[in-house]
Image (cartoon, rainbow, N blue to C red; front, side, top):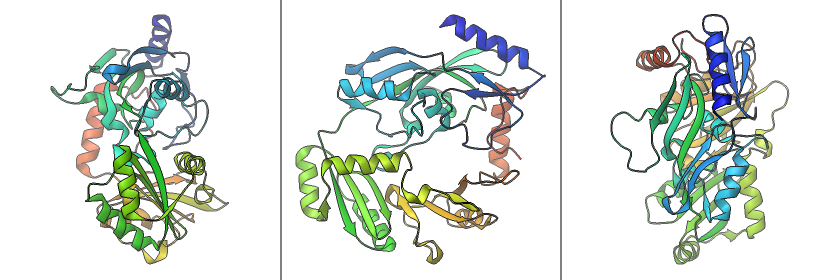
Length: 354
């Protein structure tokens, strides 16, 4: 692997001051953000393999180009999983790409976000330096948590050569319940239940139905199911449903010509907007998806007004804003980070730094 790292380093140094590079693993999320059409690909897919895995220590370290499916299969053989259920979007998805995208799936609600599980990274920055941040222990709390800066950085700070993640045992029991209710009723119930000692794992409301995943000790799951009621989904059907949500295969994610898909991260208690009754609601009310005609930027301001933020997830036209405008303080921090890791702008910017 050292030879591959050396070759990547040579490519980065050769690009300094001359051209921009777009880090590419499996290409499954190359559409996300604001891709630079003039950037040259920096292929890292050959940097693949499990470096260390200690099931008893709940820690896995892998090269950034390791296929995500390979990581999940290894964990499953040992009765463990990535609790943030990262979306794949393609069989070619890599663990480094998952971290760089920073995306969590439906179980983020009950088990935490991807960045919460990043223990350490080894990266190649825009100056050709190979740097290591964090470690491989869960008590790595000294100093600034630089490793987690790379979660969601979209390849703008450097190449993730290696990543160490905290993993967890699979829940002993899971059960999926379904309820007929309105969007506002679902938001109220989910927020009320979130304040109670229930083994909540994931939730989705869409088209008049709320689907709830319970996960934990068998006794706790059974007691919660008896208390909450609802229709129990057969396990096979439940698995298919949650995979469809994770991979965004439900019809709400299928865009037609002239449409934009909005991703709205909002305070979970935010009531349903009257003109957003067709939304798909995840994360106990904290994440909402909307399909709307192109050309309407109002969702950036509407999300900000209630303390959230919006992303034009898919369907953005050339030159249209993808991410919400940054405040002055955020822009200053981003610029300082870019200056520290990539002062010559070798890595293409997918995040707005206006």
